[in-house]
Length: 116
Length: 150
Image 1 (cartoon, rainbow over the protein chains, first blue to last red):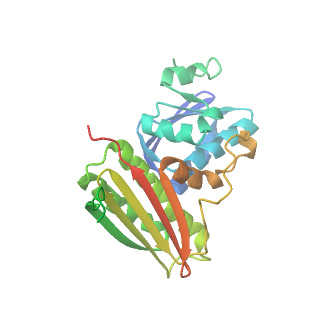
Image 2 (image 1 turned 120 degrees about the vertical axis):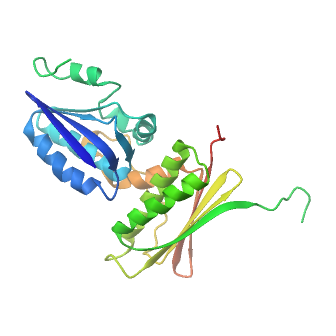
Image 3 (image 1 turned 120 degrees about the horizontal axis):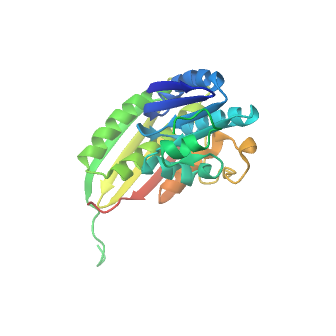
């Protein structure tokens, strides 16, 4: 799993490349917990996320809870249709902000932080 | 044989014996990828099948034994026509996912736990899930009808 991070003021943009499964999620979690603490807002680019299982969903739930508790924000964007379906089946699309595009996601971050 | 009964033609199968270790998921993925490709599964079907296999296997390893190692989890996949049948057999602590309390997916985020998600995905994504405890062993049979080939 490759994790690319970009910082823009109060926003951290993280791009996930690869899989969030039982073999990779623990390592991704350690690195994402650093990203989540770096700025109030966190957006995750899932364009190159190929696979997610329940452990990966658990990681996103954890990150969302951390951000909610801290008064920041968390969102995902550009999920492939198969992965989006897993969110729908798990009813996580009801609690987690999921955006179609990077532009849509950036609009939700308070002014002055995005590059949209 | 009664009229209308046609023998089920097994078009492909895969048998795996994995140790109860999470790292064995790597072997599971590798063998599943080859099986999915060989059987010409659609990307959607291949994803769902691999996901369900990961969820069942990791549940058995995480919750079925006091520690990792020393036990064998047998998995058999059979493709007959357009139906995939998966059978998991192990000597883990008995656990019936069919009867397990459903995960509360309607709870607010604060009360939601990732714990029940795996079993929920297994039951939702497969068409048929049956469990039996037989001679001290768990036997879990899962079936899924595949999408028509494009």
